[in-house]
Amino acid sequence: MSPIKILVVEDSPTMRQFICFALRRLPGVVIAEAADGVEGLKKFNLENFNLVMVDINMPIMDGLKLLSLIRKGPLNSKIPVLVLTTEGAQADRDRALSLGADAYLTKPTPGSVILKTVKRLLGIVE
Amino acid sequence: MEKPEAEIPQTPDDRAEKEEESKVSQRAQEFLQVFKKGAEFTQELLRINEKLRYRVVRLEEENNDFRRAMQPETAIQDLERRIQELVREKEELREKYANIEQENQDFAQRYVEIEEENNNLANLYIASYQLHSTLDYREVLQIILEIVINLIGAEEFVLLLRDEKKDKLLVVAAEGISQDDFPAVTIGEGIIGKVAETGENYIRKDFASPEKTEINNPLVCIPLKIKEYVIGVIVLYRLLRQKTQFAEVDYELFTLLAGHAATAIFSSRLYSESERRLSTFRGFIDLLTR
Image (cartoon, rainbow over all chains, first blue to last red; front, side, top):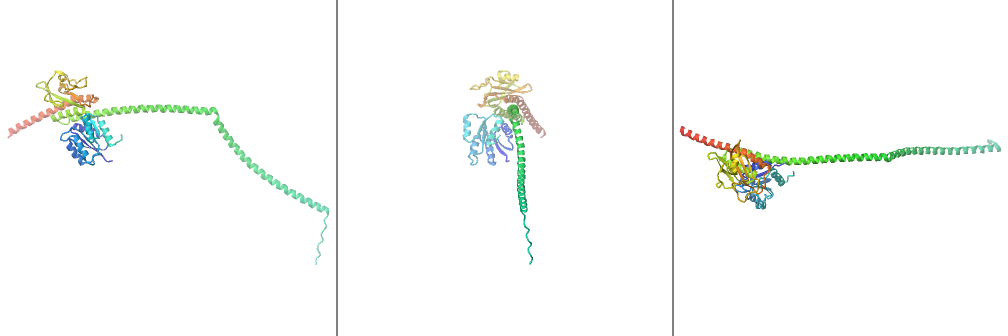
């Protein structure tokens, strides 16, 4: 079975650890981490990921910009993108979804909810 | 030429005798034929008789079976016994099903509880791990902000630390509130000052935050304590819009922050101080040894 590769783009080390802690419950998962949009884009272009998780508010390049750049790639339209942010306004949610996000979660969210959403996006049956 | 023997002339008695013998012989033949047929017929009758006997035995057996089966009392009793067995079996199965259903519900409930506990422990573990992951004072403050934003879900809050010389609380970090506009808080004065004095958590009963943030009307005050000594206070004014109430884990996080954030701040300050002093001593020694 090939590993599940997930890219986590999040500027807060605490949240990165929190997300990774939740995702490690997926068997055979390989997680790559990035602290901002630019680093995230570099890593995204180097490997084939099964899923990308992005925060919106990040230094250098925010998550929405990263999301739009990811979706511009011709082969990237099918890669699920999960947005995890503190921005709880409907307008932010709509904007992220219109840019191509597949799911939108607001912080604080339990690790189990993150895991469940990731499983759903990856088509993993519980 | 030989002379032919002369025929003896038959008398009438001789002829009658011969006729009589011929008749007897013919009748004997007829009788023998009849006797043979009779014997064959008898054999046939014996075979049929044997078959019929066998058939009779079979029919008697069948008849007995039918009789046994058709005996009304036994049949009803058998059926009643079977019905009772089935009813008992059904009751047992129903009971088992109910027990399994109950067990299933218990497991599901337990699973939810464990999942929640797991989530809570993950939050606490990560908060604690991060707080003690560095001895850099600025980093510790940043981690406290991250925990309060991301794990508790606060939008506006400040972190105040006790100034030993002035005996006041001064803002060292803030989110959503201007740090410069936040006044120093005297120990024992107002809600924040009282929390610093008593070391008791404060949580406002009215959860809804006012339109404009009021410095003296915080939502939550968490004293940062080393044993019973308060070194600072985290003051929350407003939560993120999606955060409508505190969860169980938030209170656990308040308790964790009260102890671990305090020690993390204290040890990082001591470390910074000792580093600064070490650097000064090294400077002196360099000066003296030149």
